[in-house]
Amino acid sequence: MRSPLFVFDLMDTLIQDPFHLALKELLPREHWEDFKNGREKQAFLDFEMGRIEEEDFFQRFYLDSHKDKGLPHPKDLKEKMFSKINPISETLEIVKSLKSKGFSVILASNYSIWYKEILKFPEIGELLHSLDALYFSCEMGVRKPAQEYYQWIETDFPGKDYVFVDDNPTNVEVAGYMNWNAFKFNPKKPGELKEFLTEQYPNCL
Image (cartoon, rainbow, N blue to C red; front, top):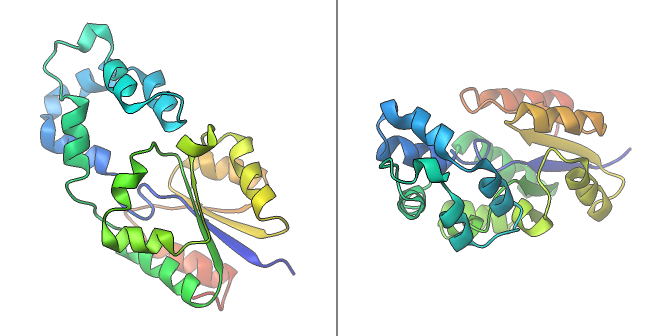
């Protein structure tokens, strides 16, 4: 019987995504559509895959058509994002419990080099440093749901029963194609994860 490897996403799984929280504080709701339409989406993807530096990301953050529309400067967004972090306590307790019982747990996150800002917060930083491995797209050059991302983990941790927890339905779907035991996390119903794990792995918690 293969031993499980528990693979957790970060944003809206272990912590609330600080980007959305910061945006709500800095931008009135009536301007959200301008923000959504004004961002250069490829710049975001390139930054998350480590293809561009932060200053390049800031320069490319908005399309030229939206640079003078009074939208928040990305530096202000970053400052607001990392002024505080809101952990999802139910998931953190599950991860702590899995680790205390000797299970292998890793992080698999689509995120930029800004993850280092998150590690500065003791509650989440200490937990992440206790994991068996941290996978960030900015250091891998690939993002979920690309199969290469999952294969990278399989190469580093071969022959495991991969238990994947992520709030993104596409990421979960691809993990299922890879024959991973995939669970779509709902941050509004965090208790469902405990039910799933205790049903699938009765002694894990």
